Image 1 (cartoon, rainbow, N blue to C red):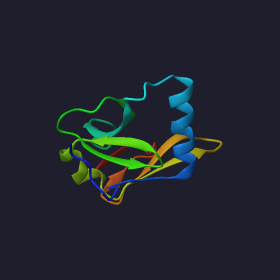
Image 2 (tube, rainbow, N blue to C red; image 1 turned 90 degrees about the vertical axis):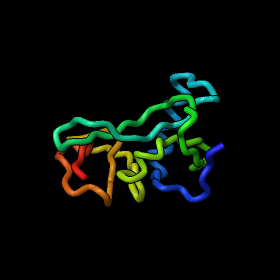
Image 3 (tube, rainbow, N blue to C red; image 1 turned 135 degrees about the vertical axis):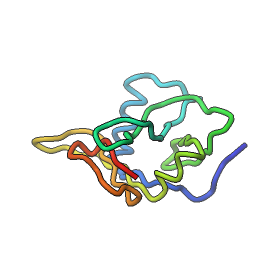
Image 4 (tube, helix red, strand yellow; image 1 turned 120 degrees about the horizontal axis):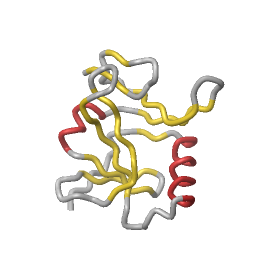
Length: 114
């Protein structure tokens, strides 16, 4: 089991509230954790992935606020120190990623370059 003690990311209280709401409303099974990652694409080169999933063999696992978090070890390079926020404003509503590893970000807050 690949469980790490210190959490490489931070999830704000408002973002955690939304994740718990989504889990409840969509009846996500208890064996699913929150997968946080990156993939190629987006307007700046990489985009964030965030969704409930089952643990894969290579995943690192940690817990924040009672929620199991899964992350591929290769993604940690891009995500360590990142903060996930929930934003509700006139122009934007949803999850926002504040990433100290990003060299550039786009206006949507969903993609970055490293």
